[in-house]
Length: 125
Image (tube, rainbow, N blue to C red; front, side, top):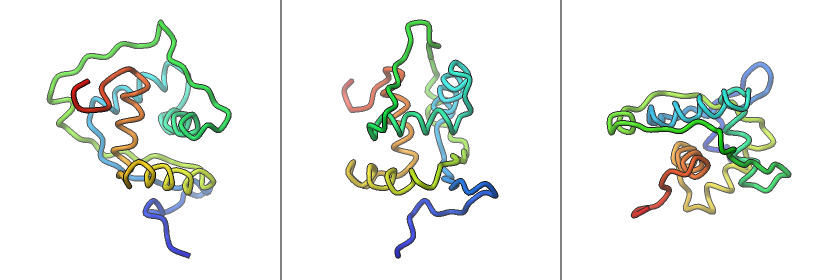
């Protein structure tokens, strides 16, 4: 069986580790949204994934959710982040990224987060 490109390792509790470099702005959004819901960062990203996969989770932004404004340097400065992903979602995440043009994990995270908070996900928007 071929190894998944996300098979970087597993934690003691069996979670897969997905190491990515994300813009500082994206990490600040993830932090803000996770805090708003009372979740960890990984839980918020997993919720976005499950929503995209149609796995029974309807995730909607509330009117009182945080608002974000960033400087250009927040989008051009990257920071390392490790997403802990349940193994049963890894293959589905790989398949979703493949359907989207085989995009890299960090690209999917940035696009999913931007879409959720109403930031651009395409050129010209």
